[in-house]
Image 1 (cartoon, rainbow, N blue to C red):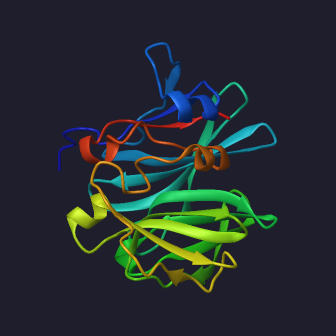
Image 2 (image 1 turned 180 degrees about the vertical axis):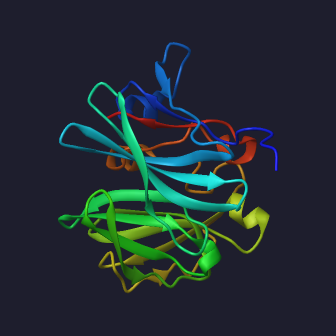
Image 3 (image 1 turned 180 degrees about the horizontal axis):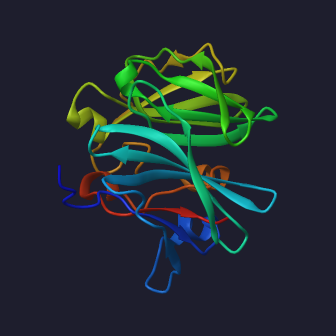
Length: 234
């Protein structure tokens, strides 16, 4: 099967994430574009976490031949020189959107896995390569690009529904829990927003979300136009 085009390209923006969140990118923004990866694959959905002077960058690696995604780890030193890459999470179903974050004294990953029919929360038992499934998050259907955050003493989860293409690209659902591992309660008003231009969590984050996580996408275009995505060094 020929590789006709890259759907995504990952880059590192040399700017504080607060500035990017407030003002976006301009023509003078310095971006280090990463290698496109092995043949017949592409990388997407980057989440970065600094540890001991090393940038750990988690990405979806999608293989055109198998139509299957796994979670790869790319590591860079302080000068963003490439150190190496390896696969750190593989399941029988497609994985993407490796949302990696710190909370409650641990490091967590909440990847998209809507083809599995559920959402699985993983905890790093041996960061950055050892991940253990610790909770299933039952919601009102399989979730796309689920994005957790803490607000006013409660955990919230934004996500899109996977029931149709329009819902995947243009719906915003919400759920809440007192603890990250549950019990999760879906919002009675779901979907709380229908807007193909900006409802899906992977398209845009508010400033407070951008501060909390070292990741963003360029404007609201990538999901519709399949443009490049980026992370911001912070």
